[in-house]
Figure 1 (cartoon, one colour):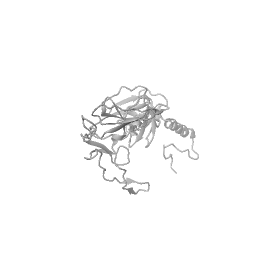
Figure 2 (cartoon, rainbow, N blue to C red; figure 1 turned 90 degrees about the horizontal axis):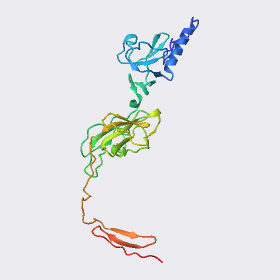
Figure 3 (cartoon, rainbow, N blue to C red; figure 1 turned 45 degrees about the vertical axis):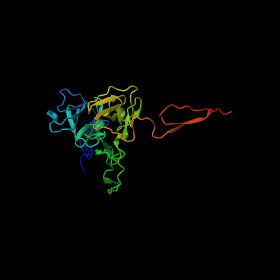
Figure 4 (cartoon, helix red, strand yellow; figure 1 turned 135 degrees about the vertical axis):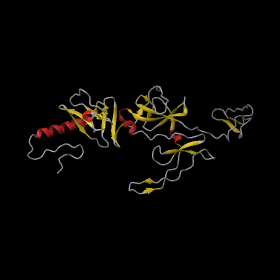
Length: 297
């Protein structure tokens, strides 16, 4: 039988063990540190005057009593540091007001861990951003077709199925531009929503990367925030945090079917009055018209 628990390495009390209270108290300290975990901060060196029960996340270049324990959780109990290696998925609330999650060998800001993959930079006039699969933001810039201005369908991408096989039924490609909406104040948004502003149009995009309280959705402010337009910067907007992205490509609209000026309409229209007065007249835009009106008795 192992002498410690599998997940958080608490010591087992063994038969005929003397001073059982020592083991039990140590285990209570472990639970006190890890259950509903919170930490003062992340740093490389232990504080000079720690208080009983204080917890820290050890930085990537630890020194002193924490040497060799990079990324460990460190709790101060009974005048000594207890150092515990984290496991994937552990969460810790930091006193500075954010949640950290351990994944892939390091602690990451949880709002960034769940943020969508960055929209690829680049793109040029006439291109659109096309989704390559049903995975969010799996996309790339592609040339629009010469007819209609829509992106070509990409080659099928194998999609894993629950049984481990692959399906070649990739969803029809769609421009991610369709998912970018004009920002609105006092509106409900979710993580991953993309908006643009009238002032910057599609030169700047803003992706919702965090919602206060880890809720599934949150509301923008009653008035627009002071936007930070440097790519990669963050704008706090009531319950939301938006991350700024460079637009990168222009939206082009074919003008083949539209004339800048015209003497008349290509197809005349009929204007008809109904209800309390009846009448109609053809109108092609070349001149003003008069409609003879008949009032039913």
